[in-house]
Amino acid sequence: MTKIERKANSKKIANWSLGIMGVGFLATLPINDSIAGKLLQGGFEAGLIGGLADWFAVTALFRHPLNIPIPHTALLPKNRERIIGTILHVLENEWLTKESIVNKIKHVQIAQLLLDKVETELQRNEMKKQLQKATIYLASNMDINPLKPQLELWAKELMNSIKTEYVIQKAIDKALENQMDERLYTMALKVVDSKLSDQKTRDVITKMITNAIEKNSENKIFGFALKSVMNIASGKMAEIIDVSITDFLEDLNSETSENRKKIIGYIRTEMEQVKNNESVIQQIETIKQSSVNEYDMKPLFETLNKRIQNLLLTYVQQENFIEDILSPIIKKGIAKLKGQSTTLLKLDVWIKEQILDIIEQNHQKIGQLVKDNLDKMTNDEITVLLENKLGNDITWIRVNGALCGCLIGLALTGIKLITG
Image (cartoon, rainbow, N blue to C red; front, side, top):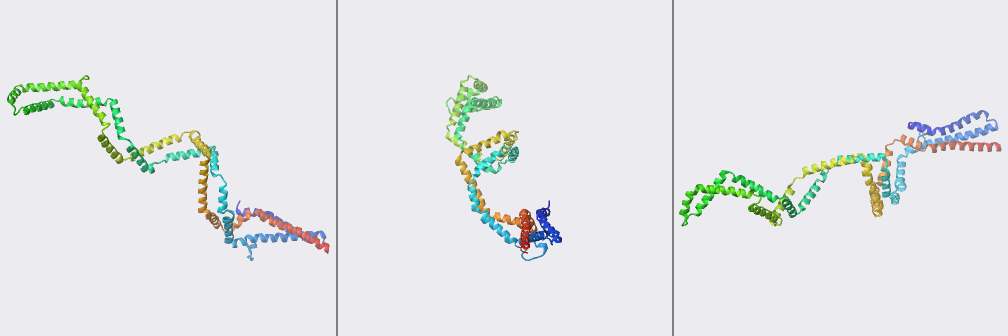
């Protein structure tokens, strides 16, 4: 139904009343010689005059009657700005003043109402669906990159705060527990065994020993005799050294070797001493801090971001995630909050402060919003709007005018007839 049709419907009753008075007046003209005819004619005539007068008055509010520019008609269009200004003034300074809004809000327990509303909404299937969508969206778009600088700072501070001596002590204790001293001995022995098993290496060792003997025999009384012996037994000397190296390696490889036990004991002692060696600890501490501060954590955070995102998605996409997990958590939190009257009061005060701050900053916009909406409407649209909203009242003004005029006409005509 269009605005014009709605306006026509609102006028239907009034038009019928005016039409009845007009038809009644015309119908009584042929019988105005009789007393009854004169009485009815007077009533219908007065009713027709009253109805027309009220029609003129009501119409003059909104437009020119019969489109004739009669003075002091079409009052609303002519005084549009003044009327809108008056409406805005009443709205801002009488009906919706800041003080009235503030006083109303102060007596409302907003925090309690919000918590009750959340509890009620959690029972609705539609709300559960929306919560599911929201949690999935948040999990899918979670990004810790904006927090990267702070997280990186915290991570490096955490790593640098770990005591180096504690790490060294634990590492050495674990190494000794896993027989790292024997493993180090075995590794070193393999290297020695590999080198001494090479004949070239043995020849070099033999030559070094021979040269050392010859060097130590110089400038001595028995030097000449020693050199003579060396010349005679040079072949045997090489054989003796070779056998000695072989025996030495076999001894070191033997599980029961005293030399083996002594060397392993020495390694263990040295490892134990490192735990309390301040110089070594300080050097490792310096290396640790330098390495941590220079370490690029970007790949780490990218991996962490993906893992957290995948973990959350898997978690929130569970069929009963809202019903069995999220809703109980929210309800438990609400119940706990309701049980803490001081906290609830603080929350209520904070919410009201925010609302009052918004009102303080935007109260004048209430009137401006109404003005903007009214300015978008033409005079005809405002007229139709008011006529439709006030249709019943306007209709009954006209109906009452016709009826009252008819009754008054009957009374006056009766008096005229009686007084002759």
